[in-house]
Image 1 (tube, helix red, strand yellow):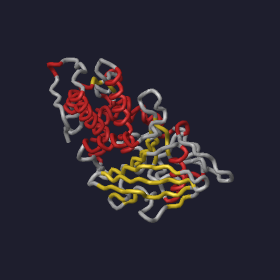
Image 2 (spheres, one colour):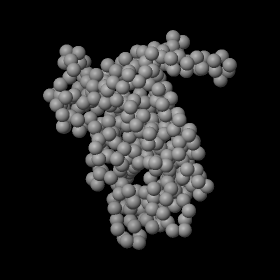
Image 3 (cartoon, rainbow, N blue to C red):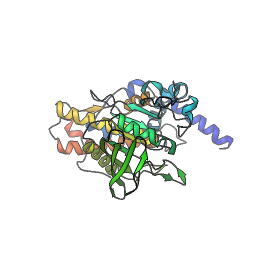
Image 4 (cartoon, rainbow, N blue to C red):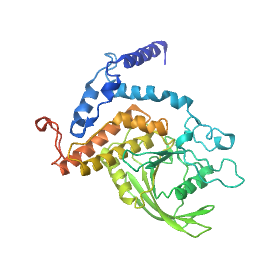
Length: 354
């Protein structure tokens, strides 16, 4: 970046900081579900700097999120994550689990740091969902045992994997599962691949996880979503919504959904944000007569309280809005009795949009 570009970038950031939209009252207003399309249009049409026509209200909101969470990102409590025995267990040295929400494994006698894994419990938005998700990094070869211990100890039966093993020539996640007829042993567990179903966007694998000491067995389902590029967004919100619904259907024990990408914050945060809002949206529709409403920005802030960096880019943040718009349109198509704020003002079509 040359001197002129640096100056332009600084001026853009200053303009974002000084934008009249960058105020808590604006963000504090929940969005009625039937007005989500209008809010998206407002954010898209809002221009912050005439020299940067592609910078809009989404930039303003995401800048607000970054500003509000910077302190925890850089100065949070990561004391266990930075202990010498645990440093090599982190895929990225700058993506660490805060102490107050980290998943604590059962300690193994004589093994220092054996309770550590780079993972955090993430609360949902509805009552009783204190451990709705576990956001974690893509396992390393050296942490396969920790990963499967976490699955067992937390009674998780669903893994949502939002990365390929290798993207753009870089290793993003080590292969922590076995092939057919070749079980993986990570004492005290044996992992056996039972089935694998592949489509262009989603691979579904079922495993048997067996505790070798007790011979107890559990079935675990992994959904590997392969349509999300390392840099950029999925082409379709429909396929992403289908992933969320399939994970719900398969989660028969209602344990935490273990969700990971590479670092466990960007794509993982996007999934957790969208899924938690959908869960609350459906419950509100079921239990109340008034129209459901939500606040995407505050949900992301809420997620970042538990694992810094959740929803890592403005593009991922926009994708949350667009995916939820499709879900709202689906639900309104099925639930026409839900009142709108102004029935004459709604031009939201029913049906799916890719």
